[in-house]
Amino acid sequence: MDVVLLDRDGNVLLVEVKPELFEDDVAPWAQAAKYRALWSVVEDRPVREIRCVVAAPNVPAGVSGRMLKRHNIEAVRVTSPK
Image (cartoon, rainbow, N blue to C red; front, side, top):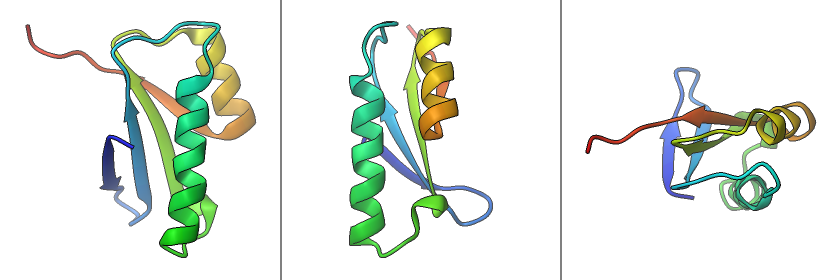
């Protein structure tokens, strides 16, 4: 996990940052899911208290929609200053 935050409700927010995402690549979401499971065990917190987000400059709608619906892993588009 690249960034660990707490949301306004005190839930853990794990952010996986990627320079690029592709429609047919589920690896970033799998990595986020893996860290959510690990965090749940290590910190003894229920999975429902741990949000996961994949952040990248481009977010393919198809794969990100499937990952949100099936695995509750969010995606967000981020840009960096040049």
